[in-house]
Amino acid sequence: MMDLETVDHLLTTTRSVRKRLDLKRPVDLQVVRRCIEIAFQAPTGSNAQNWHFVIVTDAKKRAEIARYYRQAFEAYRGMAESAPQVQEGDPRRPQTLRIIDSASHLVEHLHEVPVHVIACVEGRVEGLPVVMQASVYGSILPSVWSLMLALRARGIGSAWTTLHLVHEREVAGILGIPDIMTQAALLPVAHFTGTDFKPAKRLPARDFIHWDAWGERR
Image (cartoon, rainbow, N blue to C red; front, top):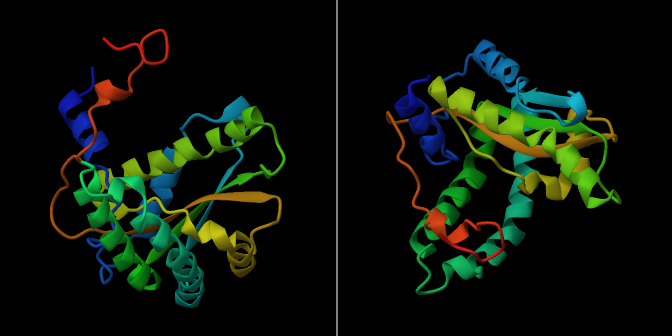
């Protein structure tokens, strides 16, 4: 059996790192490559193995991507600040406000993050039945999470972001990503400051577990 304490610690403390990304320390790209190789062991629908990862280190391209990300965030921020979890009395409010603040920090510094990794999957989901959309995303999202875990285990932080997808075509043009590819996530990747992370505050899992029928609790 694996060391469950170590495994549980990795799973519960792999955070979306924004404010604590070290913008000055270089990232060993061979480590990033190794983490992507590990991510290739994630489940893939119908054994398609149709994932692609674009590693962006060019400063000019990172700046262009960050500009589009900033434009998308300007619209997102208003929606985030009016969301239910931000309202007075909601137990998620304090943490949500901190997330909005850290997301704002990332917007201002995204171009400085030394490595961007954009995860892509072959095919487009527009117009597909839900089952096929789920299959497409099911072939890339598990590997992105595995990548975040592998990076975290090596002292490298990342953040799962998707706001650049508001300008997916423009970002594809910057990087030469073919039209047939669907971008799924953008990970800013850098070493993190400090030594560790804590589990996030979450609503009780028991309130979201249903036994044999919706709404049945134990």
